[in-house]
Image (tube, rainbow, N blue to C red; front, side, top):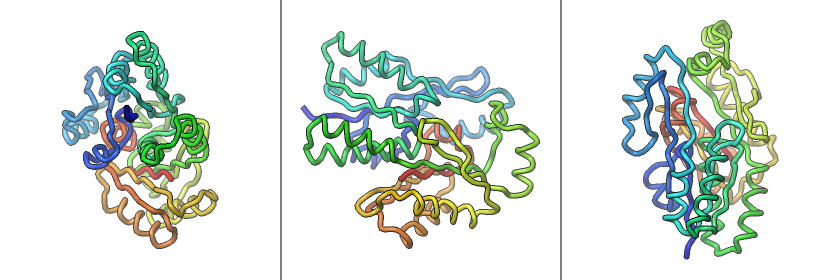
Length: 277
């Protein structure tokens, strides 16, 4: 029986890419104040974004229930599960509990990966996983290779708006005003342990893009035969511009541009972008 790939809904995908990778998605729950939304195919994302912009209360997300993961695992039979960072969400822990439930029903061939990332980072891991599966490699080799890949993967993001960081108490209102008025672009990303760190403060879009390119070069990561994923929240022009600049300077095999889903849109917010390589 072929392995299936199960992801949570923070893994950004186009329907075409999801079909090509054979993805099964387990949705998170999104919260705007006291109102809840399921981050699945039925989510009216433009409507959700409009409500989020008008929301004056706290915004956030909740991990899928273990039972939802169990159902996906049982349906898949054999599966690899890809989740967002254990440091940012209880999703990984929920998947582990779901695995225990699935084992009780006879489904035991499940391995769960904590990507220590989110959005484009999750997508990149799923792409790499399908690549390894298509080669027919032994399960143990796939697990070892993906764990090494995750440990060395780089994920960066830049926001256009910081409203949600303010609403969640992660950024002061004063700092937000200074950053917005001075057109400062904060280049943030995964710190290697699953948490978020600030990597640079840049002035304007051009300087920000150049910084992202320099981070690729300085990382020492291989580019030939590898992939890049760029997630964007209603900002295809900027994602395409970044993609074009990457193609001019590096020799990545594929550059996948994907729109953020509900969770990614909540945190990247309008015009935000996420890059993983």
